[in-house]
Length: 360
Image (tube, rainbow, N blue to C red; front, side):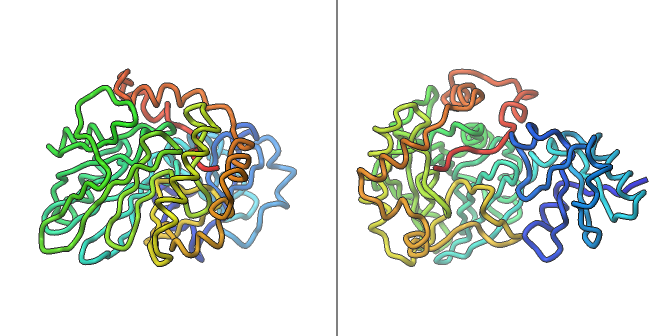
């Protein structure tokens, strides 16, 4: 017999003093394609002669694709004296874990929703009895549930850009909630929406002085858009806490790199240092702690994100050198997000499986 730990329980312990030792017993190519940050990979077949690599004084959580190989490994570890638990459902379960962090901004609440396996960040911005949602993922019940907890009804839904690494839930959420869907027409969508314009402002009720303003910041995609919420900026995939957006996902790397540099220079970097940057993604190198939003001050990012201090020529050379082939599933995801194809519900999570690759 062995203990089980759910993916949700695991998420509450990552980034804390109670973080377990993560052991992934899949084959190396599986782990290289997609893994929980910080795992140590020892394939199941090698486990018997590599026990010395596993600390005896820490709780070990064992991971595989679906929980079968890890169950065998967990039983073996317990038999040799380790305290070990099997991750129920494996990476498939990890792929469906969400958690939240709350910010109070100028009398409004901003709930950051973190899709842990994808490194996706989305936001509910609420005041009074209404909320706006920015960059929702496909599991729209998560957003409806958060809104209900806060006594909000979702009245407007936004995307920061045409997503390539994951399926957007914006259209479905807007339809289900009876909300207005706002998108930047500079990206291509083949369904009805309310077009965004530079300088648009959307005010929430309840007495809070809160507005959301859209700015066209082409680079990651032609329709990349950032939103201001009080003293914070939702930067989408334009700027992250540890990098900038990839300018090559539309296969026009040099053109998009120039656009991205100009957008950062002329629109983002003109903001005050104290502005809080809240991105749409984070990489495996970013530590996510329970209850703490993923974000940073723009002043801190000026000091730590090197591309922000490059001139245009150096930035373009740097970005183009990091161009990689578009992952094959991105074509299908983009088509679905544009409205060109309908993905069967049974295929949604499978199509998205794997990490995001939007950062350069």
